[in-house]
Amino acid sequence: MKVLIGWFGHETNTFSRRKTDFDLLISQGCWYEKEIIDVFTGTPSYLGGMIKCANENNIELIPTFGVENAGPQLSDACVEKTLNILLSYVKDHLGEYDGICLGLHGAGVSESHDDLETYVLKRVRDIVGWEMPITVTLDLHGNISKGMCKHANGLFGIKENPHVDYETTGYEAMDALRRHINGEITVKTDVVPLPMLVPITVTKDYHEVNEFIKKYKKDNNLLDLAFFPGFPYSDTPITQASVFVTGDGDQIAHVKKVASYVWDNRELIVNIDALDANEAVEKASEFTKENGGLCVINEEADNPGAGTPGDGTFLIESMIKANLEDSAFAYLYDPETVRRAHEAGVGELIDIELGGKIEEEEIHGKPLKLSGVQIRTLSDGNFIATTPLMKNIPGSFGPTAGLRYKNVDFVVASVQNQTYDDRAFVVGGIDISQKKVIGLKSSQHFKAFYKALSEKIIPANPMGLSTRNLNLFSYDTIVRPMYPIDENVEF
Ligand SMILES: [Zn+2]
Image (cartoon, rainbow, N blue to C red):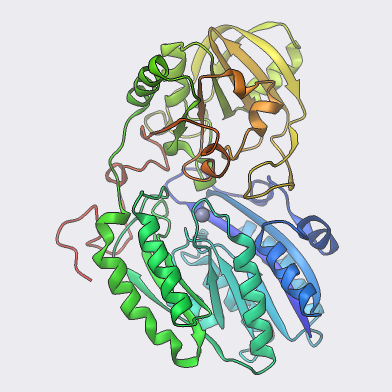
């Protein structure tokens, strides 16, 4: 058996005023052909799971192209360039493979397509026809459409947040494809959209709902069953939470019952109450007066993992104003400040205008004018990830500088990403074991690393393109009424 594999994921934040071109899409890396096997074998990723299942079942793989990122709306040129790469393999190898296993995301939006995943699958179907079995992995922050269910035989979704189950999901998608090709099962998926928006951070009670879903899947022997909170930061007609079932034939009928269960529990899942940056720093300051452990303030509102710029200044400004002892921040995206630091050299003092350069001032704050900032470390920004989500996968922040202003050590880097683990601090020369309060930009994924390490986690939600406070956005194209921003929503 031979299977073609590929990966094209994008979590699109349509509230950004920018666009994602191909260079921005691949700014965290992309992988071609055999590189995919070399880099992802044995890693906790979609591709790692697909490769593992293939190796265990003597499936020969045709690895093609892989990329995933989050960011502003994709330009049409970027989508066509990516598809030209991916589809060239689909065409060139046609006749050699028995099925296709693709990693997608679910929240992709381009200039011309509100539902990027369906568009990608349509373009694949144009080449391979309707007889070719296709299974797809998706992120729980995807907004899932009927079109995706129609064009793929089976959808397979992440359940955990932080997403520690990429590998399992990739494995299940490949295994179901294998069984479908062998004629053991007929893989089908159906989805029920729910009229509700869920911020990307999970509530405490979310896990209860998730446990019900996992048990239901197991008890009913389904190939997959997922509740997708969806991605509320893309304003499209398909933006909403959903439940989908992937099963053998008629099993997909289970989807309606589970969707009703989730809807009945919506108040447990959605929480848009929020502290702004000053309130979060004040709470951290109070905490450190009485406790010795590490306190982490995560700026949910500017999480580049949800397509924000990563240069928002609201939290760093509050931290500098509070000037707490032993405090640190990693990191802000600010290539201009990095360049100036590299030109000046370690030990020098420089005047900078930190961050706030990409989106409007009301959304992510203005640049902070700081005089006499000390340059402590300079680096190429390369690292090997320590987060359980991507353990041992290499990455880079690009050229990086570790700076100090008053009591606050902070890191500026040249590649946009959220903070997953301690690598940005390490690259910036900061030992977090000697810090009391650290600030970072992430909503949920940082917890996979920091939960065990920290005594206290305080989310900060000033304005920002990924703030938990969904009332701060003006939606134009979503289905209305929508819970929780409208009243009297029915399902
Ligand atoms: Zn996600």
